[in-house]
Length: 125
Image (tube, rainbow, N blue to C red; front, top):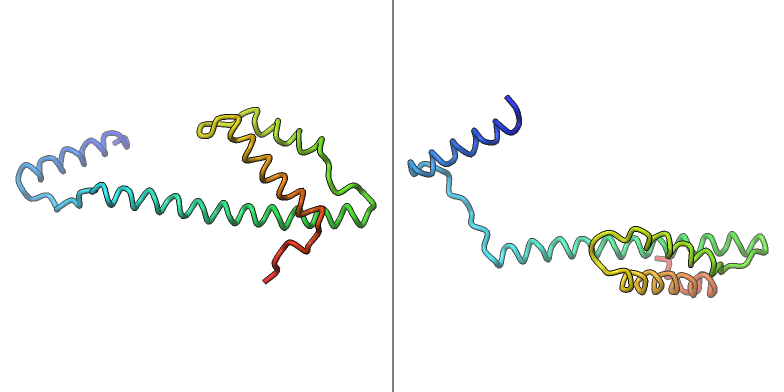
């Protein structure tokens, strides 16, 4: 039996039980529950985004320290431009290119400032 057939069979049995009045009570998805579910997903994503940004900041500091120890320039504007161009080559659905570019430039700028200032900016718990 295929997965499709099994799914259809379950649906048919559920419909028969509903007609007979023996189906288990289904919890209706109220607009409030749906909104809460969506907000929970956004909250989870916000925490992931925060963690990724903090991870990027720590890695930026690590790269800056490595470059300083070798007498290299901490900032590489050409690399930043290349990274943004590569990321915008296939931006995917969601933000338009211009908005995504602004967000990326903002993150890269904050990391650049962090790298130039060194570890004075980061709060190590």
